Image (cartoon, rainbow, N blue to C red; front, side):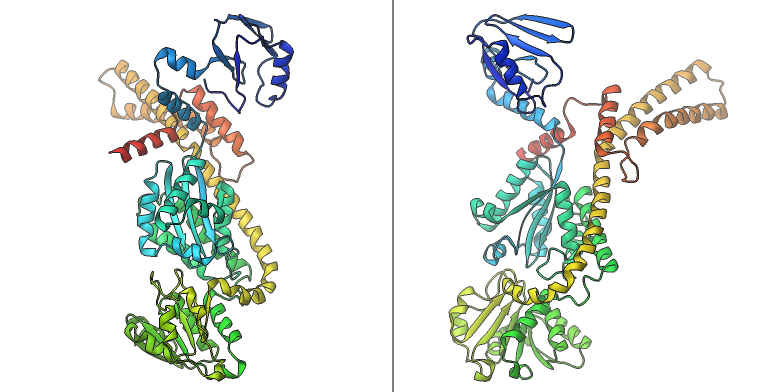
Length: 555
């Protein structure tokens, strides 16, 4: 029997343990020991006393024993393994199985964001949207990960999983992240953050509401959370718990923005990039500065719109195809938007004072040598060309900052702009936190209710087997001349009796957050029903899942 709650005491019968010493040892673990008055041992005999009962056991010489919290004598596994011929590996597996029966699956987030990791680390971990489904598959192929989702943006890289074991799940996710990024595990551990269950839920709800963004209250992150759900639909591994978590996060994000004014007047990463450019340019050049935007995706489109809102009437856009640029041109008829293909990017950069980059390219678009070859900008602009790179991975090499005629800024440099814009929204965030707290409670109630589903199914199946058997017995006793109406009446009666008998137990297994029952009470009810009706299996559901995953991976 495995020892519980960390109280494991090995005692050699060759050493004399006095009753007083044992009492002192026991007193240190009073929380773990609840079912005995005292126990003591001599070199040959051990006595146990529980209430009025007194048990005597003779112990052979030179044999090791352990005390579990119920003061039962358990043979040392290593000694018994040698005597019985059982391998240490088998004992380890048995011990692991016992631990899994005491463990439930957990929602875990392993992440890095702009607060915990620099862009140099984040860009190595960035996963393009087109590869999210592949990442989910690789994560769920791990032995202790059942479900997964990837949230990868310019400011964060977060992996959400349902782990069959917290410790092993975190280990497997971290190793996978190291494998795909070539970032050593030791370095990842310095920058990652770990959140479990309720804390993980609260974090994602904050993210969706824009409370965890570089730009407080920005709306683009909600669209990115929606994209996680859209991309995950039908992907094996993006299943009930993780899907439910992200869908609820979308609801929270919408509710926060509807019921509070946190997004009013807020800035996005794109608008912050435009603001940063204006801060770095001489004020006298704002009307004449030449703007180039590389990339016409979501971020690029927002850049163009914010530039237009600031009064720029001509913007050059470099993109692989003209379709997106034409669509933007139709929306902004008052602005001259000039399309150029990617092959003309360097020629366009040579004619621009400010270059914004926002592409999904995994390779650099501008290197130090290429920027050095560009003609310098006018002294009226400050003599230095601005490169504002809001892409992750970065489109502009960090070494470009060594060029005397260039200045390079990335998403981490936007904090300067953000600080000036978020003061008036901090008090609005407090209103949002109240909503998030309420929504977390609702989601946790829904998630916790899933724990009782196997018991509900097993109890119904158990009752149905009895009902069906007794119904057949009844019909056989009544003979073959029974009418269909009577047979239906008896059937309906049996169904009605079972449903009414199960109604009470089922009510005490449900956890929807609208009743006064605590989760611990509901789980106690579940365990009681499992014991009363012998619904428990030899191994837990988690252990079954882990064994199935290991067998599948070994094929």
